[in-house]
Amino acid sequence: QVQLVESGGGLVQPGGSLRLSCAASGSIFSINIMGWYRQAPGKQRELVADITSGGGTRYADSVKGRFTISRTNAKNTVYLQMNSLKPEDTAVYYCAATVTILGQGSHNYWGQGTQVTVSS
Image: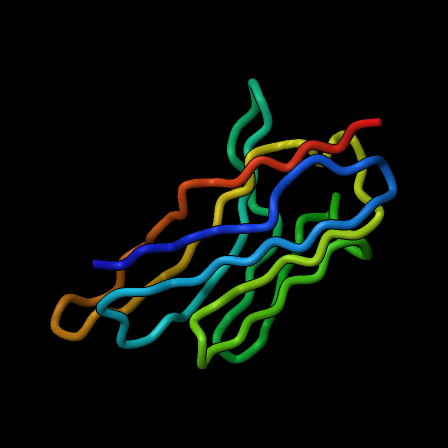
C-alpha cells in the first residue's frame, strides 16, 4: 500500500558529498516522521536523522554538522545531504516513514536501502 523508493547512493571519496532522496507513494493520508537509518556490516541499524512534518529534526551525534535532513511535504519526499563524508559513514542507508492511511491508522514503512561507500 505504501512504497518508499530511495536514490542517490554510490561511491565517494573521503571528504566528498552525496545527496540521498526518498519518495513515498501509495495510499497516504499523511506522513508524520520521515527519516534515514543506516546499517554497516556487522553492526546494528542506527538512526542517522529524522524530521517531523513540522520540520523538527534530530541527528545522530556522529553526523551533526555534516549531514542535513529536509523534506518536501507536498511530494512526500525526504532528503539527506551528506557532506564531509568519512569512511565510517559507509553503510546501507534506509529511508523510513510513519504513514497514516485512512481507516487503517499509522504504520512504519521502510525503503529497500541504498549503498553508500566512502573510500579512496
